[in-house]
Image (cartoon, rainbow, N blue to C red):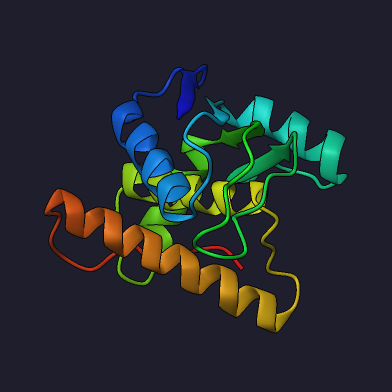
Length: 165
């Protein structure tokens, strides 16, 4: 799996954890091991510009996903996954810091960025949360992936709950 993490935000983030959780999520979703993903970490100003340009919404947001080859997980376990370019995930640590602090259980900016990375991966794979059934499926997968990744790394304590809707 070729995953590039490029921090352009000026904020120190745990780039290795972002890389690791993205790789874990893609493996768990059975994405071809030669597929490519780019994760870009930007400041609030850059994220706001993207948010306005692509969503026509004011202010910075936490995560945006820009799919390329519209890869999807294989329908069956024995299906061969397609190879390709997944696309880009853009993260904003300033928004992640605030969301983590405001979460019901409270968690760090890096924990929020890990959650947002998985959220972004799922968006690249075609998952959405506009409808209640879609939201239940996507957030269920997201929680299972985060919990599995944390367990594999020996991280104790509650997993960060989604702070976005």
